[in-house]
Length: 112
Length: 115
Image 1 (cartoon, rainbow over the protein chains, first blue to last red):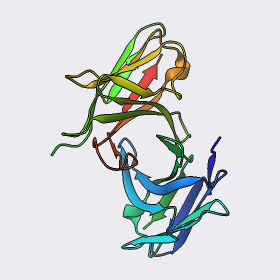
Image 2 (tube, rainbow over the protein chains, first blue to last red):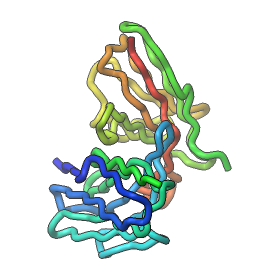
Image 3 (spheres, rainbow over the protein chains, first blue to last red):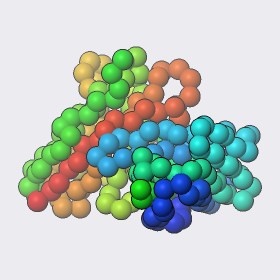
């Protein structure tokens, strides 16, 4: 059974800092991994999707890496801004599954 | 093109009542997924439906919960005889009939509070 964990659970940083969010999964037989952003009272927005054959994906100030063999992914946010404050969720799609398995999320606060 | 719509956005029920949550997928999407998010936890898959068919309900509690996606109209997640532990945010996502199922678009969620 796939399990996804994320550390830290919460993070508070001053504006401008670079930061790394971590995601671990127990079963390396994944089809892809996605990072989502969740704002309070709203739905999820997909940020980056990494296929199992890829090592990383970049979008603007965001960079996500994937090490499938070790069951790890990181989300790197450069030059953080207060608007980045949200909960970041990592989710994996298994080779055999028809649904996402989500991590519990990292709650990020970027202080002005 | 409107996104995934869910209503109501907030729902308050007393123990023992029924809760009906509705999800209208994006136009042209025929796959619907329901997830539940308990406080301070990640989203947990509940059920995957296509029009008039339940494809995977492995995440759905065996009792009191049911889901449908009729040929016409929204998908409905029904919770009978609600208990306090059902208090959570329920998210619906949809994906197009062809292509990658993991390209899911999420609705804003329904926050259910059971008193």
